[in-house]
Length: 510
Ligand code: MCA
Ligand code: AMP
Image (cartoon, rainbow, N blue to C red; front, top):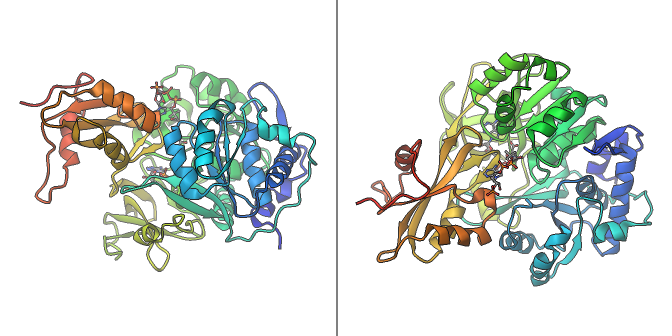
């Protein structure tokens, strides 16, 4: 038995002397050199006692080595668990404990704080800097630059990606080799990636979009990526001339549109611009075409399912729609009971296929809530299908805010707020924002007889929640509007606070 994911993703281009990673400073890593680096890491990791199926949690910055670490996990049959560097040690503590990670890789500067986390859960710690330094690179020094991939099948676990839920604790979405490979294969075909492609990569690499969509597609096609450390308009415009494709969240496109340098001349050589992770306004789509002559290709996906639908490469790229189901992927629209709705009606989007994950790590009850016995996964998104199969996302049944492509689950922020002294209860809502699509604000009811302390609350949230989850504003009110069932009416709160030029904190209603 071979290693299904390794053979599929890396096999064909393993020895290629063509570029894989182009770093902003000019350094180029060929496919062969990248895999050699990964092989040395794989030797170092197995030397630490890591074996097939062991979970490796990585909270590291974006770098060629961070991607080589992912490739090393594939070679050695380890389960890769990437974590947002913005997570606080308290958040990392939960992921390491829940996943039973055997090894935590972190940035050298974070080692003191995260060593405590690792020790608490019986995990080892190693470091990996963005500049090629760290204890893992030290251990990899002098190791052989070939590694015989550990046998792994299509249904073996390759990665766990944590996704917060609308209720309770974060859940680890289990991704198999089949999930990742089938999706990468579908996308390479659909989007016509070839070894000649150079993808401008400005996304983070700890989420499906930057890791599995961008990186796996490029690896499979044998193309190259210009690896920018983060999205920055100047850097993107500076590197665009060398690229043929770019993938981004809608904020990339709106920020680029705000820059007068963006125009047909700057983009004429580009083969493809792709958008996803959050709704791309039809207006942004049209503005982009008017300015550049290029039609953004919008697609739709989810951590648990990889990519589900895509607009057409050669045919229609309809503004405001997310396109048609990927080859091999089924999509249907259902009511709450799982019965398909009438043609053209709005329904909950459900998906089935080789792309759909294996379930939530050690949470069979949560898996059963979201996955029907016959394999249909309930996305929590609401959609409408045109006669020719183009899907439009019209809303969400789940309480979720998507800010600049990052998911913020209100319940997680509300729980953190409600645990603070002086807060009786809270509601976190998303408001429209021209830059990030949505921003989170908190509406807080102080405990009776206390003086509201938004600055103190903000400081306390700073130690428990990643920065991007922290509410941009805190509004103080006397009570939260509720319906007859006692459920907080978030739509009423959104109507009340949307567009309000409120100061950072407003006084309680009297
Ligand atoms: C940064 N901040 C944010 C966000 N990003 N706050 C809310 N939402 C965000 N997305 C915070 C920073 O900590 C900072 O806080 C302040 O906002 C200003 O940051 P700024 O410099 O504007 O941010 P940036 O570095 O320019 O980042 C914005 C960004 C970035 C480029 C939109 O968030 C990004 O790359 N997003 C992509 C996310 C992504 O890849 N999602 C895919 C998920 P302070 O000033 O206080 O320090 S995968 C997925 O959803 C599915 C599977 C799919 O379909 O793809
Ligand atoms: P995540 O849980 O981070 O994988 O986020 C997945 C969610 O992002 C989906 O359930 C959708 O709500 C949203 N999403 C992804 N792509 C799109 C898109 N093109 N348009 C609208 N929403 C999207």
